[in-house]
Figure (cartoon, each protein chain N blue to C red):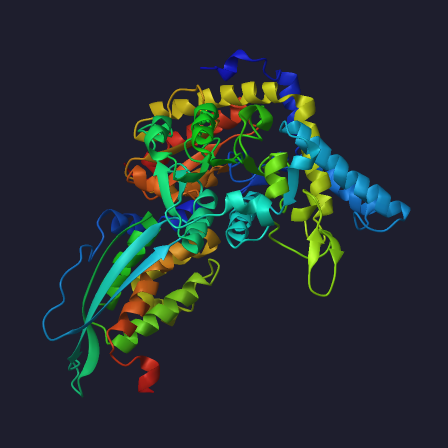
Length: 430
Length: 168
């Protein structure tokens, strides 16, 4: 097992410089309390270079991309495609393997509707191998976010395919060994998260990809939680498709990406159709561009894409090894809340192979009430089921509170959180 | 008192700890009954609330009116949602159906008051439910306080007893 803490971490000076790039972290909340932002798993804050890139695009270069021959159109197209190249490099993909979407949810839905269209015969001979038939199986896991569950349920309902899943153990780690039985010749898709947004557990990708390959199933990775926090090389991971969102990786909302191995994207039929994705249109039929344009119909979210490119650059310049090492330290500190009487961590309690995402319950106090007391101290955490009801049900609970960090999270943040959490039970006279 | 203390008043904490009416009870024979299951999808809180309604002659005489003769519920959720259902139980049981519906309307108005509360005579009608005024300062928590009241409205409709509006 790799211990992330073995890697070089951000120095105190680097961390201070990072903090200075995030103006929102200086504000106060709830009557003058300094903001302690521990909800980065839901959405990260944005540094000045990202905000500036988006602003600069509108101020100096705004024009429609991939059309028009004027100078602004050229510059806008260049900014748009430079961002694609930057993001592709950031996740270890080729430039043509990154499709812009409005977010990760849209990316996974794109995959499920492309498979649906293939099932209906769209995409011709090349797409036939993606067609699903009644009795085919789609395997997911109990650790998934709703965005990696519901689209598959809908696809199953449209095609007659059946949903099966891998369970999780008492630490919330996916039972990878179950793949030997659950992933079979009938399995057409294996969709799983790279890291849980609830437990923070990092999934060992290699054995799952290996098993899927043995049976010829397509692999789809939800990389929303991993890409902002770990060095991710999608080619090395070997998955067929992957989704991640911009807003969780210091980028803007409204943009995310679908990664697809080139030969997979080339064979998949389009989903959203219209302008910008066609070659030739007649009154009765059309031919389509190669990927990624085939999947990018209509006017794109260009400014957000440019902002996301800046976010990838920002993280690149910090170095993801250092980011991961810093967050591993934060994870270890967050895990010490397990020592507070009445606090129970849902997820792995050791700092290895996990992110700085720590969900917990407090005996006798509902998660919403925990969150409210923390909020009164300026500490922002997420409460609820975090879009993972099946995982919560697995642990017999309806809701948890969750502290999640990012590159800008400090030891002082964790200390302030710990201190207010330690007072929660007393507030409720427990 | 801080905003947090205004929100979590002692009455609320007491009701949350020892909620009234919790535990579903089978409706008595000869009563109309309705049951509603409400979920708060953002947090997973849920309640199943059951009412029984029978015609009762008011204490001051006059014709019998449909009255909430029983109310029980089960569910799980935060202290605000649990306390709110408990207070609702105390307020509504024994009231004419029309009055129960009216209290629901007033409570929804209170939750829209952004911490300011309602006029004194209205607050008198709401009794203990006015302790939730502090909750109305927190937009994310208003739905917690309203969960049980939504179940009440729905279950009263499901009794099949004509509602206020149909009466008038």
